[in-house]
Length: 296
Ligand SMILES: N[C@@H](CCC(=O)N[C@@H](CS)C(=O)NCC(=O)O)C(=O)O
Image 1 (cartoon, rainbow, N blue to C red):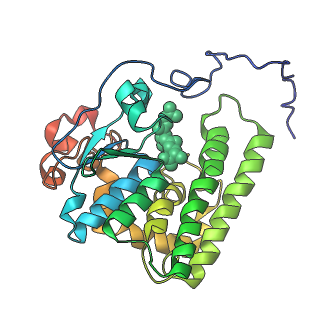
Image 2 (image 1 turned 90 degrees about the vertical axis):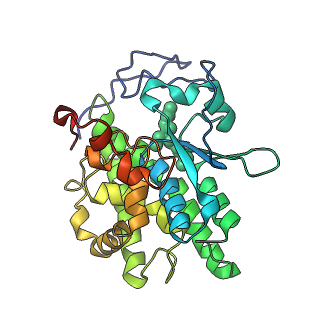
């Protein structure tokens, strides 16, 4: 094993803003608003403040699935929150999510606006509001919520653990990469074994558990997160890949992936979504046709 043991922690931790970590410009050891700025509010009852990362995409998939089922009350405005610029610390955003992380939802259809933060809580709120994508039978519901909460608890070990140390940390620490690669592979194996026996995560029905799990594990296996598919031998999880492909073919999933996405191919970037027609009329290849700025 390589020697990564030279650091001796001091008695009291001190914040070093120049620690060289990725995202050092936005990370701080304190919470709360850093600047006064109100949130924009569009024309629909549901206002989403987000970014097209896996946590954000969970919610836009859900909203597009609800609209596909004919729930007109699920029409929404999706505003882009640029976390690289620190917009998650604007006072308006912090009022919607005191934890300063996307996604945050405001529901203006309630007597006083309802704020919902944490992507899992948003999925469940919408599922209950519209009576869709969460089973009502107690046993089936328990299975669905178990997987939903599994995702919320397990995935940070893949993202903040494996992804951080494999792809973002300024030094490669064998111990950390080993520890989290083992856990990432254990989770991939768990999903693979589960999906060997069922079509969807909870059984025969597509639920909010699929919507929560798909953006993260789909991105890792399709090599869109951390460029680690080969390292983790993602191609060996064939049942998981079957499900990733199947869910990825859903039109609502394809639309959900485009919303609040300021990266990738411009034809797949819909920075803000205010109307269903925006998917045809307001993607970045149309708004900014300069081929020089085409992503990949
Ligand atoms: N548990 C939260 C995690 C949300 C989260 O980590 N969001 C990230 C982007 S994927 C973020 O906003 N980061 C900004 C920051 O940490 O300052 C959820 O699922 O909603």
